[in-house]
Length: 417
Ligand code: EPU
Image 1 (spheres, rainbow, N blue to C red):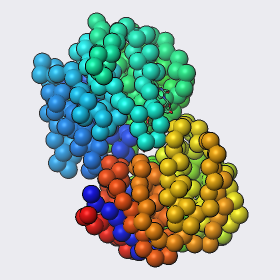
Image 2: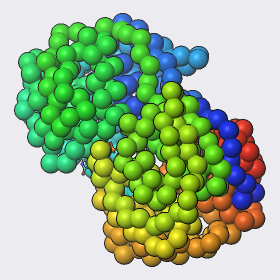
Image 3: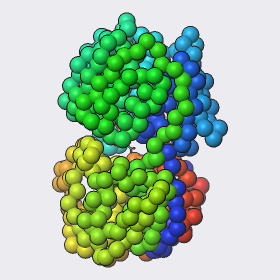
Image 4: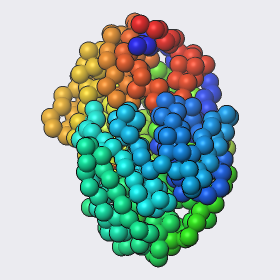
């Protein structure tokens, strides 16, 4: 298993290009199951999770190739509606093939994803919504077996604005008979990007980006060409990298609009940010101060940036608090940051962070994607050498992390163990 070795305390300076969004690309790739013609996708990041999704599409009988752009072809008669456990357990987002398979084939056998490092993560809201559209489900040997005739439009009110649930239902509703109304829908930009992609294929979706989305079902979807949005979480992570090392970065292919809540909190901490023509310039500004952060569904502060802002707050003047409301177990990075000298105390959903002057390099263990990112950030700022173990998590979500960071001056290398 590879590890990252970082010699820290070097300011990062220069330009970085933000890659395409993992969390937008994954549902868009699975939405290709709905399209009767070939789909060409630009700006898809080269990541482990994308390779896994392409493998899943091939297992479902689709053609899927990544060669600069990605081309996916899902011809109806060749489709096999089965997503096996071996694949689903390596990537929970596989469950997003449920809606498209039911809508296109009337059948889906998808392994029920288990818990994961950040929480139990059930899919009950996905299933309840699809049931309202006429699907029935049984659980057999760990697989969800879904069946339906043509799905029927329905009025669905989510108990919680679930990102994956909204995406699964959007895809299913696109080919359903009649109108579907999704209330308390997720407003994340990745959901909007998926809806825009479906519309490019001929779907009739309105209201994406708001909490009420209306979908008029159509009989068929065509192929399309589409560019995936930039990865706002990768961008947010590099904004923090510039500040935590007291450097200055210009991030290309990045829009502040998708990062509003993060930009707001960074400015409150004393960070200087300016939007340019096609990106964002960031540097520390005055002294950093601790602030209070609470994770929330979009447009609130994203849970996927919680670990990174915690690493930054650990070096601010005074103290701040972080409340995690989306996942029940997303503080696994805390004890690792403490190994590097951070002063953080956790009680239930809340963490109190008291700033220290400096992190000290140490061997640390990554537990999930964003926790790993926070340890890399702490390592970039730390005095001495930091080893981040179990970096396969990072390979799932950050395209060419070491190459990008090295390009702006970081002393970081991957070592095979
Ligand atoms: N939830 C339920 N029932 C459901 C669905 C969700 O109880 O049927 C709960 C979850 O257990 C969780 C909360 O609702 O506590 C939020 O889950 P949501 O469905 O919104 O998240 P997701 O679709 O599973 C996506 C991203 C996550 C990101 C969250 C929140 C993808 C592939 N994953 O997950 O990204 O944290 O939305 O924004 O889009 C990451 O990239 O590191 C990552 C974990």
